Amino acid sequence: MTSAVVVIFIVAYAAIALDHPIKVNKAASALLGAGVLWTVYALSTTSHAQVTSQLDASVASTAQIVFFLIGAMTIVEVIDAHNGFEVITSQIRTRKQVPLMWLVSFVAFFLSAMLDNLTTTIVMISLMRKLCGKQEDRLFFAAMIVIAANAGGAWSVIGDVTTTMLWIGGQISPLPIMTRVFVPSLVNLLLPLLVVSQLLRGKVIERSSHQEMSAAHVNHFERNLMFYLGLGLLIAVPVFKTLTHLPPFMGILLALGLLWLTGELVHRAKGAEEKAPLTLVHALKQIDLASIVFFIGILLAVAVLEHAHVLRALAEWLDNRIGRIDIIIILLGLLSAVVDNVPLVAASMSMYTLGQYPPDSFLWEFVAYCAGTGGSILIIGSAAGVAAMGLEKIHFFWYMRRMSGLALLGYFGGATVYIVQYGLLH
Image (cartoon, rainbow, N blue to C red; front, side):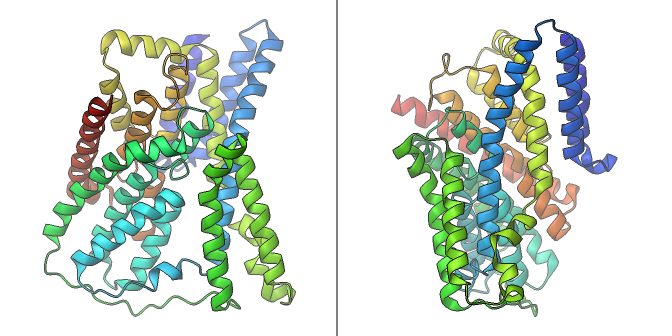
């Protein structure tokens, strides 16, 4: 049974990693893999009550992550429908590429920590289309936005799906991850940024003739209200969890309800047609449900490896062969440049227990850093990279030649800083 489970998972994983060449959506591969794995696991055991209990537990933990993601993505869509991100983009005036690169990168770095790296990448690349007219000039900006967004997401419990998973699972807490992973993540951004700045020195951007349309039927007050309220509610979710000790998904659902109520009250005088694109009902239709379905499939698939004790055996093998936990985690981070970091983190959460490594210990914080930033090494290594690839038509080999080495420099630089910092503080 164990061999069959491993083979099926590897095939499903390969289909997920090669979704572009084989032209099969990774959500389909994840769902099929999860279904087959649970079927094989159920047929291979005589204790059907135990399998049902394990499936119930896996569904419950998966549902928490899914509910949180749906809530967060919907809030961001509502802000975007009200043209709320114009609050940030309207402040940018410079035409020199180097100052603009630093400004855009740092905005992406901090915005990603408050929202998430995928949403931030989409927003910032949309901004660059408005600011810069030449597509070839935007390539370096798009690539640096990916690195900045992934680095920013690594030091916040709501900045990346993987840190959210670790937070919900109890492996990390908001304040410790912010204080201990912030500097390594900043180094991860600064090293590539310094090199790119040298390459772009003296260059001026060519202004785009394209001007984004303002959101229909939204005035200045409504735009600012929904932007600051939505952003404030997202930031308040970790505070809610700390005060109430309730799971984060309850905080995000409460935030969603408050934003929904505010929107209904603000737009109550508008006609149905005028109001429709500004409602949460419309925002729910805009979120990326394919990504949600992918998370469901891959998390349930990894759960089978956990219940079949495959991940525990893998952890023991790595410990025996390599021995050093820091090297093991660095290798996992490098692997996330090739395959999705969601299943890698899910696997690490099953490979090592909280009994072995308590919350906010070296292992979990270093996993958050390496899994979050390792995906920047290749353009296909993160959701942010895949989004940038589609939006700006970035070629895989262009990114590999121009940016992979810089992303690798930032990755190892940040990893070294975290290890040294941990040694000094402990």
